[in-house]
Length: 199
Image (tube, rainbow, N blue to C red; front, side, top):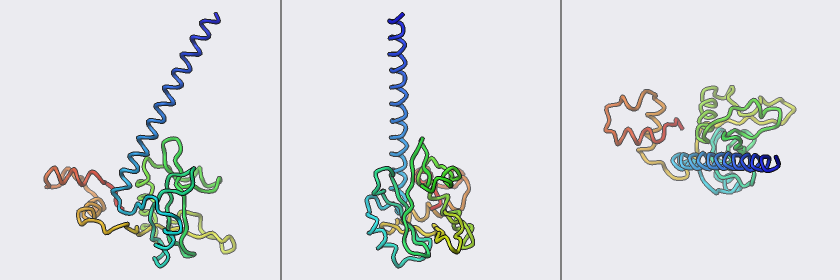
């Protein structure tokens, strides 16, 4: 009976180890895909430091933003954005295969989760652009006494001037429609579908 229990424990431990390995591989693949997508955006600045991001955003209008690697170990990425009170930083959290904004405990369960960082940014950019100055903030509406600042994301800051091809690709994506139905060579269709975001 003891031998059977030992065999069962070994089998259980092997299965658990295999499951953990699959989860780690899945996370590694998802994060790798997120970084690959981010490198195509032009507004991902990599290992830019917080003070450098602040300098870049200092004279920008409200809603201007960029994305960079987080300097905090528990987070992968940080959005640096210009608000009415000046530049601010908002961390992006990765848990259980999903990306979401870091926030206070009470708000966290209400925040949407995304399969990729670019989807997350795209969501909040579209929300900010749609709602304009009257809404679309990433934080609750500021109460006069609370000191809370509304965060809009409308205009990305590119690390370098994006190529004309990339600008056209984003414009075509914004226009909607099925890429496969466009009268274009397959090579161009592949290029367009390689980055299917609106920002």
